[in-house]
Length: 151
Image (tube, rainbow, N blue to C red):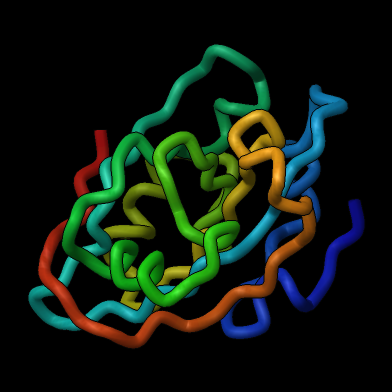
């Protein structure tokens, strides 16, 4: 799987090491895409995130546990095509230029004014009718209210 500027034209491109770690250990097809969110006062990201150490690749990122009804991610999802909508089960393997340390990644989500989430979705989580491709990022620009909750 090659790196492409299409993965993050508006934010920090994924680190090759982070991408390699996230995609290691499986022959399963994967969708890699980026979500770029610009924070506004009083508006949170609107996701619950969790992490696990079950598999070595999953120790270096966070999973989306839930997307809240309000927040920047919900706005992103409303403006994005189906494949680029962040959803429960997606694996965030890098946040801005931070990767490999889940605590630092969660902190980066909370404090950075602009957040580029680099996301991996395994083929088993993708509807069978949807073609796998690397989807380019698009900047979110609507409003709602919520906050990031990280476990």
